[in-house]
Structure formats: structure tokens, C-alpha cells
Amino acid sequence: MSKIFACLLCVGLLLTPSVSSASSDHSELARSLPLWSVVPFVLLLLGIAVLPLAAPHWWESNRNKGIVAVACGIAPAIYFAFKAPDVLLHTGIEYFSFLTLLFSLFVISGAIFISGDIRATPKVNTLFLLIGAVLANFVGTTGAAMLLIRPMLRTNSERKNIRHIPVFFIFVVANVGGCLLPIGDPPLFLGFLRGVPFFWTLKLILPWAMAVGLILVVFYVMDTIAYSGESAKDLVLDTTQIEPIRIHGKRSIPLLLGVVGAVAALPSVHLPADHWYGFVPWREIVMLVLAGVSLSVAPLTKEERAEGDKINPRKANEFSFHAIEEVAVLFAGIFAAMIPALMILQARGGELPVHTPWQFFFATGGLSSFLDNAPTYLTFLALAQGQGYAGANAIVGVSEEVLKGISLGAVFMGAMTYIGNAPNFMVKSISDGAGVKCPSFGGYFVWACIVLLPIFIAVNFVFLGLRLF
Image 1: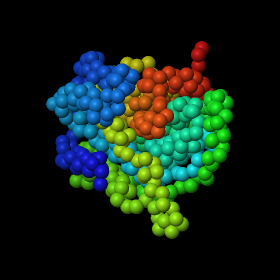
Image 2: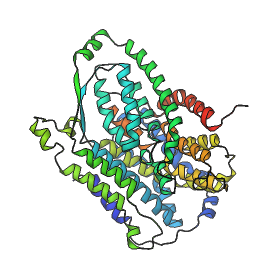
Image 3: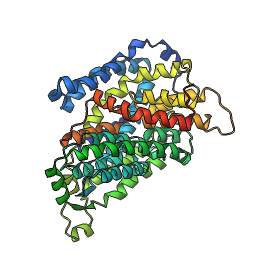
Image 4: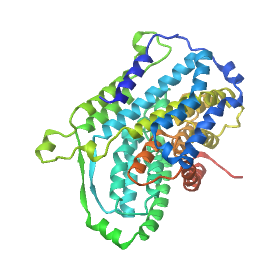
């Protein structure tokens, strides 16, 4: 059993003791927070952006990432431990749930290996991304990303001009693709827990189709140009090294579906709680058990071994905990350091000129680019509910169009930076480890602004009522 699995289980147990059943109203505290209280969060963002360029070798160590995360997150954590311990506890529970889901999907998907090396043509690569966009809605953006990033990189291993591939993979598979079901992306799951009907998100299918379609068109054009620049030797090598696609470790697929079922059906810690079982993280316990089973049981079925399949999926995937450790240490600091930023936003959000669906899209999305998109979604949902909409088409006290703006903004614009959504960092780490270096924090943001912003503006024109005049 891995150290991470044991640590997560311990954290879960620590988060479930009896606590005060009444959560205080901290609006006065939030309004008293000075703007400089967000400095640790800003410094952490700057560190993530600058240190990979200024000290690349030093930054490679997850221990050093942890030092930076602790340095930026410790002061807010201590402050709220004394001033508002229930806020810190709630943040810790959210972090535990967040990391448990990512850890479970990461571990189980690591025991599924998709072998094969088909031709790395622009059509094949575009099809990879389209499959990932659909799959993300059934196993989450994290699960889809972990299943497909390695085979996509391996398929393109004979090519040289492929640095754009992980960038578009993050755009489509790790973010934009997962907006059709609540299990696709954490913000939508939180909306489901707050009362949004499970299948309501299917109403986002047209903006989903437009956004995914336009991104794939841009990718196809860019990949075609990159493909034309490959050497004749590499193209011949890509053509001759053909191996059919095959899935190894099929017995892990039910475990993956079990995680999805746990997310959709089981409760977690719910405070304040009237009974003891309200303090138990049932959902996270089941997910950790499934991850433990995946780590303990041989991934190949008897049938696969009888067929002569000797591939160990984890070894073939070059599986290690480095990527999930990176996410764990960085997001520990992010969750702690962003508490003041979120509280200030919740307290003063009503002062913002945000009323129309497209305004909610860009406000939610803009902050989801730099804050975690799940709590940002909840913040703007609360802001919209506070405006007192009571129309016939109200969903959880919000008009459908405004809810669409919030949902699309949180999911789509989580792709704008590496920290907008957790799978972004995981894909980057895996790609870097495979020798396909992703852009720096700033470089990736430039890519996102150039490719995604025009597409998001177009989606708003068509579906959310954006007008220039």
C-alpha cells in the first residue's frame, strides 16, 4: 500500500471527528479582510509561473514544490485556525475530497494500459482528442486524461514537432470536454450536490459541441502544418512501426466505474451533521478502498494471462506517484492560500457588475483560471442566487441561462492555466516525463489566450447573448 494511500486515509479519519454543528456566519470577517491578505496566494501563483524558468532543476523536486506551497499557505492556515477554524476545516475537507477523487482515478487508470502505435496523422490525433472529450463525461476529466495521454504520446513518439499536442489535450480532454454530466468535472458535481438535476447539464451539449468542434478544427490545422514539417525519416518510421490498439488490465475498468458510481451516489462529510454518519466520508472511503484494491490485485485477468498477455499495465505505463504528489503538494498550498481570496469575493461579489449570462461566464471563468474552478463555481452560484430570480425556468434559484454561463465558465476556462483544473498539472507532468516538454506557466497561458479566448467569445455570441454594441 502506498504512502499516499495511507496518508489520505489518515487525513479522512482526522477530518471526521465531532465538530461544532453550527457554522458561523463569517461575512463580517470576510469584509474586514484587507486586500493584501491575498498576497500569499499571488506569490504562490508567481512561484508556479517563474520558478520552473528561473530554477528548473530545483523545481523538479516535489519536496521543493512542497516548501514553496507551505511557505505560501502556512500564514493563511494559521490565521484561520484561530479566527475561523470551521472555515479551515471546511477547506481541509474539500481538499481531502478533491485529492481522493484524483488519487483514485490516477491509481486505477494507471493499471489500464492501452498498447499500440498507430500512425500519428492529424486525423488520428484529432480522433484521439474527440474520444477523450466524450469519455471525460463518463469517467471524469482526470480519468480520461490519465487513460489517454500516454497512448497519445506514444503514438506520436516517432514525430518531433508535437509540443502542441499536450497543450490541446489539456484544452479538450482535461477541461472543455467534461461539461455534459456532473461527474465530468468537479464544479458540476458540486452543483449537483446543491440541487441541480443530474441530467440538466445535457442542456450544455450545443455549446460543448461548438467549443470542442472549433478547438479540434484549430488543432487539425496546426497538426497538419506540424506534420508537414516532419522529416521523411521520421514519417517512414511512424508508418513502419504500426501496432494495433489493445486494452490491457480490463479488470480495472469496473474499479474505475466504481469510483464514478461512488461520486454519483454516495454522500461525503456533511457539516453540520445531526447524526454520526454525517461525519463519515463514505464516498472517499469507497474510492480509497477501490484504489487500494487496484494497488493490491494483479491488473491482468485470467483470460488475459491465458491469452499470453504478459504486459504489466503499471510497468508499461511507467507508473509512478510523482504526478499525483506534485498535484497534492501544490494544491495543498493553493487551497490554504486562496481562502482569503474566496472569502473576499463571496463578501463583496454583490458589488460586481455581474448580471447577464455572458458576464457570469467570464467572471466565473476568469477566476476559475487562477483559483480552483470548483469553489469558484459555488461562489458565483451563490452570487446568482442572491439576486433573487424567481422565474418559471429557475434552477436552484437561478435562471437557466445564468446557470449555463456559470457552468460553462467554470469548466471551459479551467483550461486557461495549469492551475485552473487539477488534471492540467498531471498531464503536464506526464508529458514532461515522456520527453515532450510543455510550455512554461506563462507560455501555456499565452497559448490559451490565443486559441481559446476567441472560441469562448464566439460561444458567448451564439448561446449566452454577448453583444459588442
